[in-house]
Image (cartoon, rainbow, N blue to C red):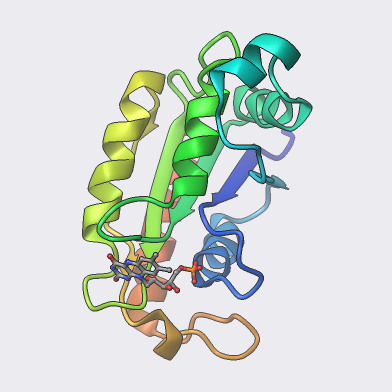
Length: 178
Ligand SMILES: Cc1cc2nc3c(=O)[nH]c(=O)nc-3n(C[C@H](O)[C@H](O)[C@H](O)COP(=O)(O)O)c2cc1C
């Protein structure tokens, strides 16, 4: 049997992003897969731009990657208690390409933050934002990595055993849904 197609989306564009580190940890824990890392550097959604130029090629690419994916992982930062603007922008754009992607696709969400809560609020927001797409968002175990600067080493490795175990459990569950 061929490897499942796994799409990994980080809600942070930062080169040193802890969410991207977490995403890579999750991809490794998922096991053998045909992995794609999404690029969500899209223009800001603008209805006039859509009318004049149509769906940008980069958005169509993400749409097609979502459609092709057997499973999706999304790691989002928490900005003022909410998901990142770039991730919300990407979801808004991609919802304009038809058909609506991610329908019935298993999706695991996670977050890493500099703060103490690990992004519980941002995960609630992300769940809400995903609702129109009707994916199967796993209910847990929760992966909300707090004080992120203290739990990744300089190579991006997650050094905290509890978080590592939670990531593994979530990825085992995601794999079982493929
Ligand atoms: C605009 C902004 C708002 C933030 N708001 C929160 C917040 O509400 N809760 C929190 O725990 N951290 C907050 N942070 C800190 C982020 O969790 C931290 O910068 C984190 O490393 C961002 O994710 P990244 O490393 O993947 O880029 C905020 C950071 C920024 C830049």
